[in-house]
View 1 (spheres, rainbow, N blue to C red):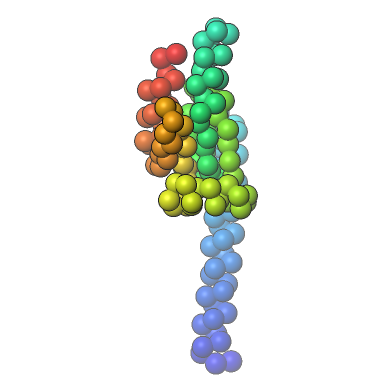
View 2 (tube, rainbow, N blue to C red; view 1 turned 90 degrees about the vertical axis):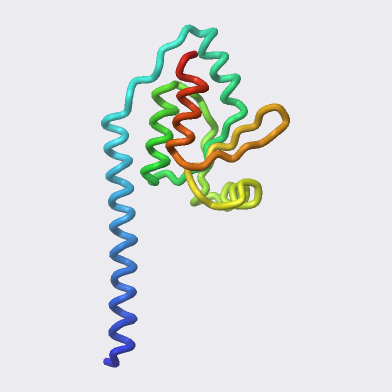
Length: 138
């Protein structure tokens, strides 16, 4: 076996190993999220209806097993904000929407439509701060 072939086989093996590691860790993160999910914020029906109406203008583009996306979804759950979720990894239309309208494929990405304008918000910390500020006091 030539050195070049041996290197190629080794590199391929490492690629497969790294992918398996990422998938395994992603599933672990999802499992931990499920077991430790925070309680939903309780609101009176009128206030919850106002939150749901405001959330109609929000869409979260995400990868299901991405730890930063899980963190963002946990905040949505905690605040009891019903936001549309889009799979930018497995749904080609959602992926192209993020790329064409948002400018880059990076998740989590919150699409905010307000006042006739669309804002694409990236970075889980920025999104979580926005959600806490927008829905935390309602």
